[in-house]
Image: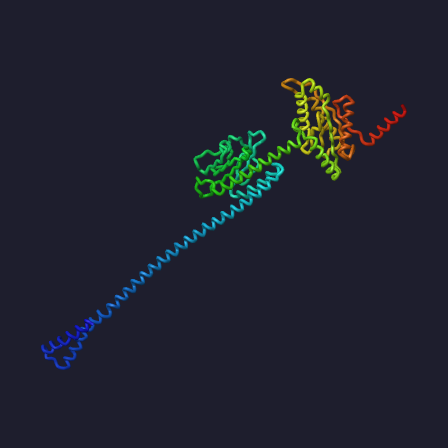
Length: 450
C-alpha cells in the first residue's frame, strides 16, 4: 500500500516535469506516462510479491529440513527402543531358559535322590548315578570318587565326558578333601590344580567333598576346557556351581544312607566274630537255593564241619584262644567259598558251607581241601602258637541225600558224627536214604538174633 501511494504521488510530478522540459505532444506524453508507470511498477511488484514468495519458499525449505531432522531423530529413537526391546526380550528369554533348566534339574535331582534312596547297595547305585550325572552336566566332564573301607584311598566309581581323572587318589591329592570345602580353579588362573586332574592344558575344575552327617564319603569332580577362541580365566558358571553343590549333597546323603543300611544288614546276617553268615541267613538262603535247583534240575552241596576237641582250646588258652581258632577257620572258609557259595557259622564251633550247583565229587573235593588247609593252620595268640587245629566234616548233596533242608542237614550231621566216630580229622559222605534203611534193618536183625 505504501508503494502504491508513492507511485500515485511521484509519477504525475515526474510526468509534469518532463512535459514542461521537453514540450511533449499528447502521444509522447501518453508514452512517457506508461513508461513511468512501468518503471515504478516493476520494482514495486518485485518487492511486494516476488520477495515474500521467496521468503515463503525459504521458510518452507527450512521447515522441510527441520521435519527431516525430526524424522531422522524419531527413527533413531525408534531403532534404539527396538534394540532395547530386543535386548530385554533376549534377557527374558534367557531367564525363562534358565528357569526351565533349573526346573528340569530339580526334577532330575529329586528323581535321582528318590532312586538312590531305594538302592540295595553301591553296585546297584553306581550305574544309576552315572546316568543321572550325565543328564545333569551334559556340557562338563567329571567323576565321582568313593572312599575304600580302609579310608586311605578313594576309587573312581563313576566317570563321564572327556575327563582324564585318576583311577584312584589319596585324600591329600585334592585340595577340597584337605580343606573339607569346595575348591575351584578357573582355566589359566594362578592357583594350584589338584594332583588327580590329568587333563591336558589348564581346565576349569570344581571339586566338591561329599559329606553327610559329619562323615566324608567321597568326592565330586567337574572339569571343562575353554572353548576355541574363548579367553582363559573364566570360572565355572554360577548355575553349574550351584547345581553341582546340590548334586553333591544328594549323592552324599544317599551314600551315607546306603552305608548305614549295608552296615545294619551286615550286622543282621553276619556273625560278628568270624564275619561269616549267621544261621538265620543260611537257612533262608538254603530254601532259595533248593527252589532254584528244583527248577533247573541242578545239585546243591552241603558241608557241615566241626572243630575237633574245641573245648581244649578254651581250657588251655581261655576263650580268647577259642575265638582265634574260630576266626582262622572262618577266614579259610571264606577263601574256599565261591562268590555264589554261602559260608556260615552254624553255631558254637560248628560251621556250614552251602555250594550252589555243585555235584557230589566237587563238594567232596572242596571239603577235603578245606580239611587240609585247616590241618596246616598255625593259629597264634599273643605270639604263642596254639595246638594243632583239625576239623571233621559231613557232606550231603541235593537230591541224592534228601530233597528238603531238614533232610539234607540231618544227612550231613549224621555223616559228621560218623567222621567223629571214625577218629576225627576226616570227611565223610552222607548215606543215601536206601542205605540208611538197610543199615537200620541190619541193626534190627542183629538185635533180634541176640
